[in-house]
Image 1 (cartoon, one colour):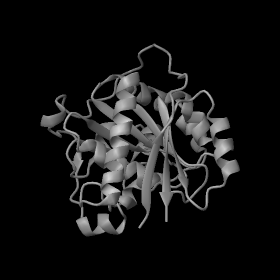
Image 2 (cartoon, helix red, strand yellow):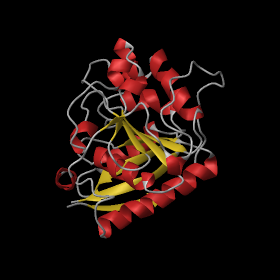
Image 3 (cartoon, helix red, strand yellow):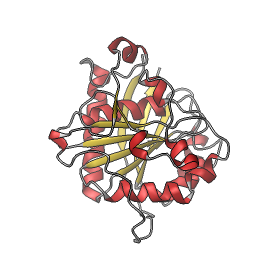
Image 4 (cartoon, helix red, strand yellow):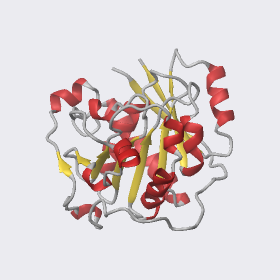
Length: 258
């Protein structure tokens, strides 16, 4: 089982969406973080054994891994609130570093904080993983909203953890970078940015270096977390990743160690 460590860097200048308000999407959940009523969100019953098997353990047991995610949670909350940010992307230089697992566990850990609601968005259209990590059957998701105009409220999943909602990716597609910057996607991002101040939105993104997906979406996200794998991620790949993300705030790094 992997060990998770975290470190936080200094903020950098942020690139944002324009100030114009784009059309609203339906309300995602009620306003009070500690008294949420999910009226339009599909509730699924998760198997603790399946979650442990997939290592989504942030709310299931005590131990060094859980504490590591709590420390990361506190760092993330402090930095996000300090800067008025609520959109966080999680990526890695290359595949296999564990950014999807980090996104899942961080989202669960954040949602345990009573003043915090969390929306976890699977934005890896090339290889969606969130439904597998949470043991949810493959179903329509964000891709279906962007391509087929399905309402977001019909795609959301409440995985049983308080104050956490999941927006799956749906089916894998080609042309993912174009889809990530399409007008419907930017409209949705604007809605997610502005509707609820208490909500942090985590975007699980594909690896940075093999494709242009992260670079395409990064100007519209407040900050990034970079996941690296000890013993496998090369120093030059980390340097190249930081160079490509220059101008985008790097909230911190997460070191996954096998």
